[in-house]
Length: 227
Image: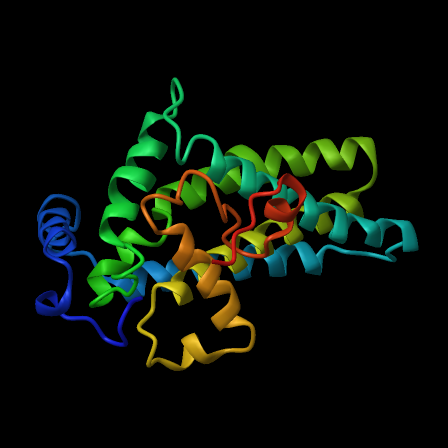
């Protein structure tokens, strides 16, 4: 299992070598990990706040949008991870390369923690992809929900979807933080982190524990593995 605060000297040789190569090829001199994380949090919080500010006289049935969207997002997370993130698909090869060929080689069960903020790039979604997600998915889907149901339902859908994405990013970040940091000691973190750590075993990563957040999809499809 991973240690508290890894150094290159304590990492498996293959992981240490890949990390050095990844940083040279993919992490520019101007990259700032905390700015990357701050951008993700700020954009998501502002978008959620904008949605909440637009809500008016919510009807009881409209509140059902929140749990339905949460479950939908969990299944999208599961299927996206089990599918194109771990199996190359036409037109989606970049997703497979970034996840399986980079992320899973940067982090293994015995080397789960990042070493510095410059390693955040191997964990967080690229800022451009976040903007693309908001403009190409959240906004059009919200307009469709508004047309079919109501403006309140649309705002609740978008706010919940973005909130779920932010939750995904922060949990995934916490799983790869050193074990001696406060974030790794949050309630439920040991259990969720343990499931994700098992997923990073090379022999298990294409078969088990595809939910990054809460293992609802894994329970439904029988891919939950506790070790």
